[in-house]
Length: 206
Image (spheres, rainbow, N blue to C red):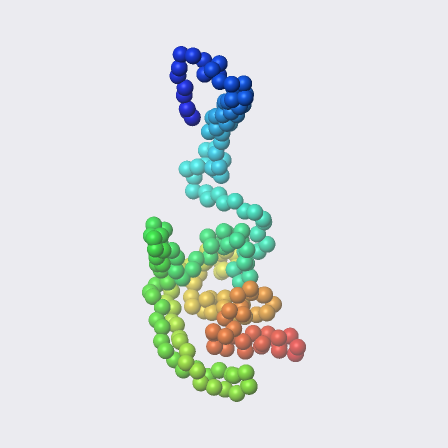
């Protein structure tokens, strides 16, 4: 990197007072040091891939800490999300090339959710049932979704994923034993969530 250049017949430092000459000498020495460091740094890189693996199908990410769990029901840290986001697909995903503004597209969803206005019966703070306005969402999954092959399945072959599997995942989050960090968010939004969650506590006391 070239910072500047001076060209004149009379030596530059010879024409300057001592104070200025000392300052410029120090400045020139410091500049030379910075240029040397800059040139030395050009060989460095923050490329996380080991030599020879940059073209492979392996994704490297930097984790500040080891993941404590990869269970999506209670995995909540950034480091865990790096892994979980790759393992567990969501209904939607962001379009990779459309970012101004961001755009969502279907991932495991087969169609846009159907939203309907409904009236539901819920228990009020006084314990009495009351009618309130609500919404019902119907989600349709892609028919080609399958679990990865695993010994837990017959023959070790992953089966088709169904709506019942999604429902089971939500029911797990309602179980206090799982300690799902976002469970309180659903408590007043999903009809029957709180009652279902309390059912686990009642079962323990029996």
